Length: 114
Image (cartoon, rainbow, N blue to C red; front, side, top):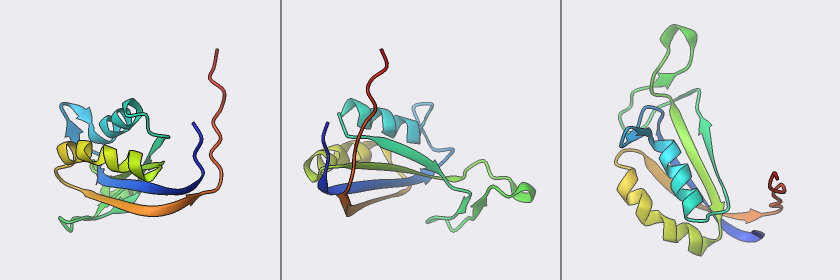
């Protein structure tokens, strides 16, 4: 797959403990993005944060949280990202979903292992 120039970055902010049918929500989003043929998806775990609940979650030793923030980031062309949005409507009941216009400078994959 080639990806260059203008694209959309889809970022989904959820909690680490959020689940979809007993599976971590972030993992479900990544696997659905893969099945949808999107260019790629990554999950980033936050060390501290808060959202609409205004509860601060942190990874600091004295106040270990079981619900750290996570961000799922997907970049692909606008049409493909927008086609994926209805799946997020089903999955994300609490969280934040944002879109940014980005410019892809380089997107090069590894050759598949044989």
